Length: 457
Image (cartoon, rainbow, N blue to C red; front, side, top):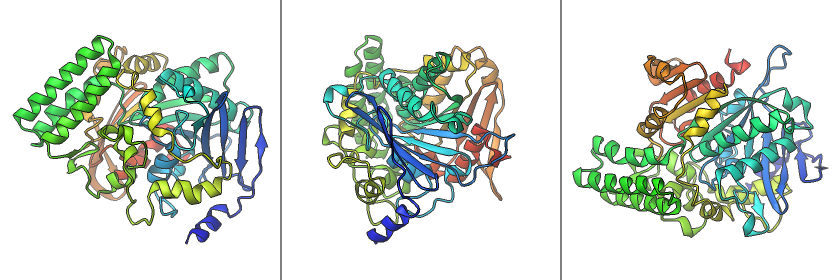
């Protein structure tokens, strides 16, 4: 079976290898895939993988978009999770995904920050400690990929993020805009999409207790304990004690797990540890040091994918590593990801609402989307931080009515959308934390609208 997979993955895949001053790139012979490493700083290596869409519209009057997918964690792999579990061309069984986002755009997956997935550092001092440091590295990577490729420069880039990736997305967008203005980065920024994103940790921790009480998962005692710890976190954030706030967040999740009989933080209708597609698709093997942190649960547990004969860790370190050819022998996919989280503890609970405000003020298209039954980044918390925006169009946005969303011939309500000027919000019904996995049809339609894909017309 493995030999067959290697054959399928390497078909028409004779390497065209190129070396830059700080980069190494591998291409398939037909140009449909390209991947490589960029040394974003000395001894700090970031891995990326670009898929060109077979559905691309070759019309001079149309622009075909590129989506940069940023995973959360911090420490979760976009090359692994976003690619094989959510929106890439193949699923974890290496079978074609009918709902791949390649139907609407080219896809660029990056293992960000350095140390995540196949990305790695040669010295622990090189791990990033903040969202801004991660954005600087990502801007360096984008310059290496885009600046000498006129074809890519013609396609608008949409940064689409999930979970903690939302914080990376808004800081990257601002960093990229500065680099574009300074003419050190040649690309068109089409917009930013924040999926179930950890933009305001304070608002999320305050949403958990009331939400779970409303759905009968907590009683009054559990609600009191939850709200008390949320208030403690708020005070720690106000006092600038960010590492303490991260520790209290971990404590709060443990209290909620205990009081709710192990509610699933990625779908509050389920128990943690159930064999739902969402849970089994997302849990990976990483450092035990962060195993108590339920938010990073999909970093800390090895789970088999539905219908698969191997977990994601086995797939990436096996057949995929063989296909890619350029992964150093001593680099294990996910081997440094636990350290990524640890080094970012002081930034983990910091909000990025101001960055969203700045993007809106600059006229950047910002889309927010949220799964209905997500808990970790609950819709209730997302709506709370949205109301804190200082953007001049906020009141008009809030006053607008929503429009219902449907998908295909099924006329049941799949979600709602509200838009005003350059801000849009999607409420995705029936989805947990991983919207493309839980509601692939409506997610695909949504991303087509976000990117103005010619395939969406």
